[in-house]
Length: 311
Image 1 (cartoon, one colour):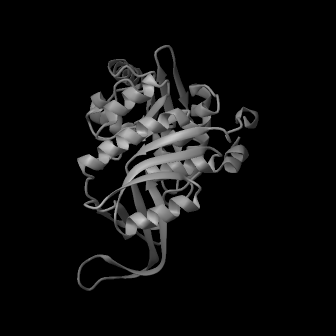
Image 2 (cartoon, helix red, strand yellow):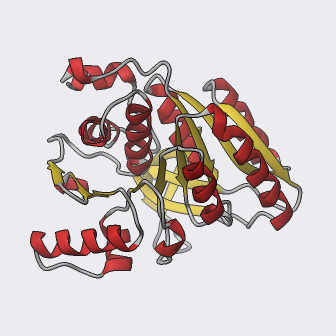
């Protein structure tokens, strides 16, 4: 399959959405607190990583593509940290600062290589900042091949319906990582990439593969999507188009951490589409990339070299 990996250096992907700072506190757990039945973690190491839409952009660069990230940050320490991390990853960051916004931070406490606790800090951006972002989005469309809208439900994609319309009018494929139960706002996109729980939330449970196929195809038709890509964890992923359903089994490996795997999948599909591959071929490579990142702790990336090695 190595020969199927294209030259990705010319792939230009515009990523828009909710980004966040992922903080990790790693430590040793050797006793239970006398104050409450909880483990005591002696923190020994701190890490900061790009999360949300920023992790999508990071995965795009790791796969050899060019990423432009349009998002909103607060005028705070976490926002400045994100700017520094984005610059270090060679991501073209177009950040709109909202003085009333606390930059989203997810703090994870890790003990003995297991996540013990996650603490979230977040607020929603203001309407004025989001409107400014929409105007810049329209200007950036001419300089990209594919658009990724990364929805983490933090308010950064309030104008997503308008973004889809503008991008499609400009002839750009629109890939969306969805959130919540209002999928009507994603109508007209090229591809949606829900996981199993997200699909169940909008389509209901399925009895078997035939029932799943019917529900997925109905949702795809209702939303006027070209395709729907369902990520199924240990079951791999399934692609639903009007004329075809293709399934890719999961790559057999020890699963260490699934956080951020969805970011890798949509990033890989975007890069491969922007490099000239079909959606079916892009899906196969995205499945390999997902298999790589679940073997790593926390929000991670699959590099182009790792992908070539997995083929």
